[in-house]
Structures are given as structure tokens and as C-alpha cells.
Image 1 (cartoon, one colour):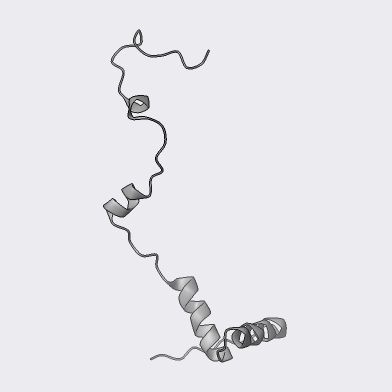
Image 2: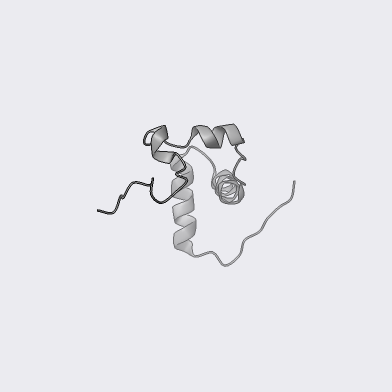
Length: 78
């Protein structure tokens, strides 16, 4: 595993890191690793089925039917 040395960090940030680490029951080093991992972690790819299932159920199927001519189309802007 590689090591990472970060220099020139503002003391207020170091204090905030240590406070956050205590709140999560971790060392400052472990908290730093978790913050980096969370910031750089790639989002999980979702399947097409999951994406489609997440689409909200809006309207009736007839609301989305294709209309072949302008004469048949309802005037929705009145």
C-alpha cells in the first residue's frame, strides 16, 4: 500500500479532521483515508432494469400515446 504525505494543511483543517475522527471512532489517519476514498470512489453502475424501475409512475399510458395527425391531437394549451 502506498503512503501519502500532505504538507501545508491549515491547522483549522487538521483540528476539524481530528474532531471528525473522534466522532466516528477512528484515528485521524483512518478518517483521512475514509474521506479520500469517499471523495474518489466511483459511483456504482446501475443496470438498465434498475434505472427503469427508478422512473416514477406518472400519468396514464394514454397520456403517452403517439398521435398521428395534428387533427387528432388534443389542444392542451387552451
